[in-house]
Image 1 (cartoon, rainbow, N blue to C red):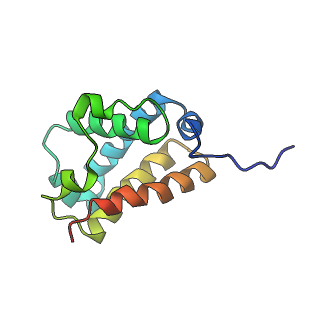
Image 2: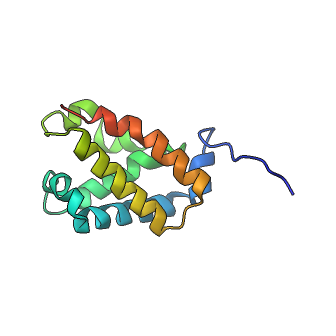
Length: 134
């Protein structure tokens, strides 16, 4: 039996380990469902439009490319500019952590293996931090 540690972040290894594009779409669906129900996520939910359809689409498209899959975000939505896109929002450490918490809930609900869950949450902390305006 091999005790190899999966190599995430190389090519599309992260995307494949999660389960492909359909799994990313499911992750994002669960992420926004967590945002809708978790009290600690109320402030970040209020920063989104009533309909989350476009937000889901953008996050799904971003994450697929971020995980090494097809990079369709630019062709669909323009350049990825995480700080600029969030600059108008009042995002501090609590909001960043609520966003990451929603992602942690979504990953747990999908029963993502611990090494991949840890890797994703560690790596997602950087773009989440880039969203901060305070």
